[in-house]
Image (cartoon, rainbow, N blue to C red; front, side, top):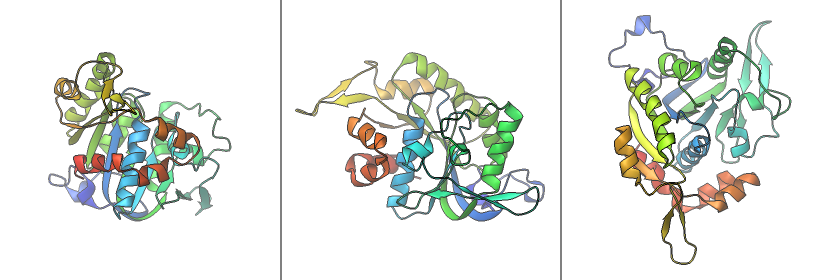
Length: 275
């Protein structure tokens, strides 16, 4: 069962009438959502970086891939050819044994439960929500210090379910330096605020490229600074991250986790969020 301390509503909650979902197989101290509202900004990459840095710091870490129709986390961690175990408990109930990465991060994703990773999930909203709830409740998480939830784009069913029904502690927002993206991300920020979930801040991904000769930071998408974008969103700027072709290459080879673990350039991200 999840620890009530992980829930942002714990101080005002009537625990006898709590309607938050709980895990059946383990205790989770902190649940952090990583969200954008816009696809293609590198939200799953930020989730993977944070999970790796937390594990490197000695914490017990899990990742729930909540993007049911566009799951990315198995590919990020290079575990996409593995499959989670489904163990029958009764005729109608199962429990999931998550796949562990090389570092020991526990990952559950719909792509670890279906036969082929490129098979589409063609489900309507209620079925998708039910699958997410089951993946959260019925996975054998054991004891975790942190569960990171990689959220899908948008402000629809999954985002609403996670913020209202999960004992979530806070959210990390991901954006890129483009006005069109910021406008969509602003919708998510407003949604989070209306649902009274704390926001840690925004990570501006793909903020620049770094010259390999002189180290100059060259903006790619906009001349506006990350601080200006964060000011528009009305939340703190946590960090500006570059386009990193070495990370892309390692990700394509299934080695993103080990690259991030060894690279000092990503250590400051965890420090800036101050989990």
